[in-house]
Length: 195
Image (cartoon, rainbow, N blue to C red; front, side, top):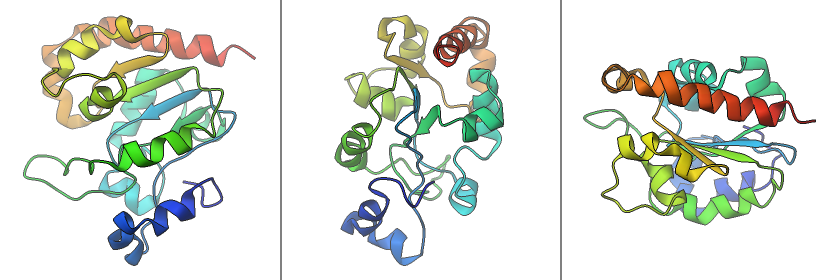
């Protein structure tokens, strides 16, 4: 989260975000004109909203492990950008968190993306970002999307959410960590090694 970054104040001033701005919540995202890898996830979790540090939780630890990078590279290299589908913690649902609000990504992502001309790979985490960016129908199943990740390369790499809530899915689909994660690391390493 960078209060000096493009559109930070505009996002806070958006009437759609009035309820969050009134609580003195800040939009959670990180952009950098030098970034070469972009992560698009769902929405910040409660801990992330409170600390204002993206992916600062167990999900983030697993994500960095899957990516094969350290916290230092993730946060300090300027190579990694993060734009969620919604900029604010949406609250709890009966199972997990409330989904990101509709229309937020469509309104703000093009503006934020325009500030980052060097993005070479966009990691799409979860069904919401995948269906929007890969132009898939609502009926598309995340297991099929992730299993067929090669169809979307070199621009997009769809993965499941690294939340502990997905431990059952991961145990039922061992191919993900056996075959997909190494390929994700390979793609990231290829980009990061190019100077």
